[in-house]
Length: 208
Image 1 (cartoon, rainbow, N blue to C red):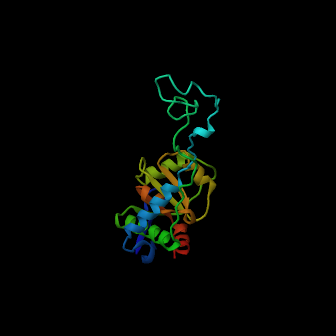
Image 2: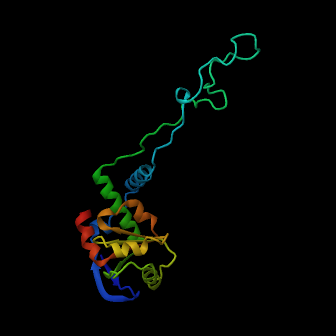
């Protein structure tokens, strides 16, 4: 499929690029997308939660009162979970929430996400550009020229460019990714996906 190429001034260059149908024109597989997004969100969890149980509480094990005659239940330790300051019963322990999906399912999910964005007309191709030095204001100007200021945007570039990345890093709704690092969640989380002209071939190589 053919799609117009824009420049950083926000106007069409008169050129078109060919987006491969096997990546941008497939029937989206919703279940593959669900599995990929669930895996991504699960893998973001640190799993460092921890509560001390009875055997980990610091304190004396001296019997706190006599066994009988007090009118209350017998108690042998201040570490008892029934007492304030006592240990937690079956408290959370550090664990990993990492999930895995098959490589082909992961690839299918990314293609499905890109295809759904193309169908919704939320994908545009931008002429390759770079900055001499990091400049957030210049990056904001580009988004303004494309009428995307204030929207969640994902810029996909072919190779890592530190100046472009640093220019967008301070913007809450702007994200820059290389074609190799592209994931399903990033694609779906963006309102508009901007693909640099040089990244199209890189996506073909990576996703084919």
